[in-house]
Image 1 (spheres, helix red, strand yellow):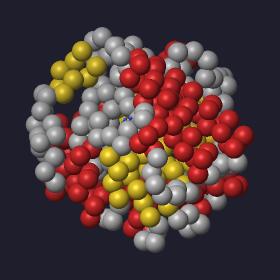
Image 2 (cartoon, protein in one colour):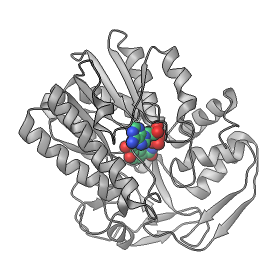
Image 3 (cartoon, helix red, strand yellow):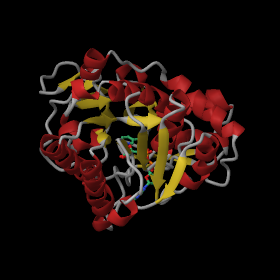
Image 4 (cartoon, protein in one colour):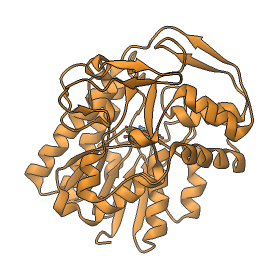
Length: 352
Ligand SMILES: NC(=O)c1ccc[n+]([C@@H]2O[C@H](COP(=O)([O-])OP(=O)(O)OC[C@H]3O[C@@H](n4cnc5c(N)ncnc54)[C@H](O)[C@@H]3O)[C@@H](O)[C@H]2O)c1
């Protein structure tokens, strides 16, 4: 590890806290700081774990440049702070713009001043929803699937790759993330810092305080475990919409590879997710959650498809697999089982 001090913004969140703990465990000499404003409900429950693992917590808000005057040197930042919900911002766009864009600019300024390199957690939502929903689908008993007979740049049955169009509305969440990506590329080009952008599909795993509009598969498992009702929303209300699912520890393995060879991949953008092999519909998630928990809960339907929602998203990992020899290790059942074990062994009841 060539870096001395890692700052993870959003470090008490799901991905941030898992990366912080994993980096500290693998590199005990690395100083790891987790900065978070604890806006996400449940983030506070990650604080004892950070402390136990010798990760220093800073209560700060990336929207305030003053909170990023740290008083110590940082040579690597992983930017994980965000309002990550696609539903957020609809009634308060300034909140999401300030958090996901102005906040990122403040983080980039810290990197510029301190000459710190950066890994940026972006999203598959930079790809526009209308273009994704235009890809023809067929319906199987348990899910939607893309029909094979199509020629669309950036698309194959494996998933969406980095050449897929970015033209068109993509939700405020996606737009603020894409804007941040553009600025990050300028900072890399102009200020001698190195960085990489990961456009992630759905990530899941322990210590994710999932909700209906973000962290859906963990939310599904929590609801099954605690026997709370659920709803299939939109697209016919039968739970056939599909996502790929990546375990957060598989994401750590990738980011560790990236950090160790940042010079060779500087400025690169990667689509990163579970991919076609680790994909599931909500209906399939229900079956797996029933099997794993032994609980069957009531699931109703809501026919109204939410604005900006998509019926299928699969990450095409070809580029990251080829360049970095990385591939997810865990299948969807093992991700869900891991979430189940975490819920069972920890007091997450207060959260739901
Ligand atoms: N989880 C996923 O499926 C997924 C998928 C694609 C991209 N991402 C991206 O990964 C990153 C982490 O997501 P996550 O799933 O861990 O979400 P999360 O909500 O669990 O973590 C985000 C953290 O940022 C903190 N935060 C929010 N606003 C802040 C601010 N102004 N200042 C400081 N901290 C602030 C929150 O309190 C929270 O702890 C985000 O950038 C998100 O866009 C996540």
